[in-house]
Length: 62
Image (cartoon, rainbow, N blue to C red; front, top):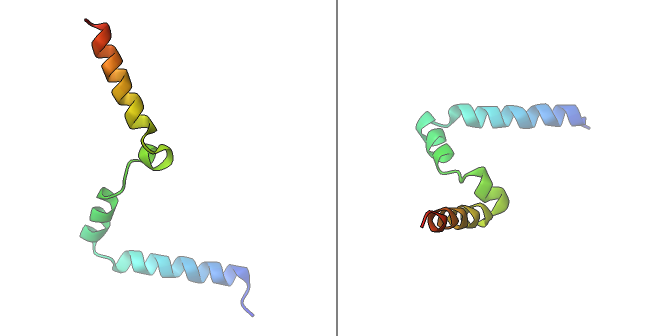
C-alpha cells in the first residue's frame, strides 16, 4: 500500500509534467483570462463601491 508521501510526490510530479509540456503561449493566455482576485472573492461589491465612490466624488465637486 502506498503511503501519503508517495501519493503526494506522484501528484506533484504529474502537475509539473503537465505544466512543462503545455506551450508557453497557452499558459500566458490562461493567466490573462483569470479574473481579478477582488471579483473572485467579493463579487460585484468592489465594482459597486468604486462606482458609488466615483459618483460621490463627482457630485461633491459641483
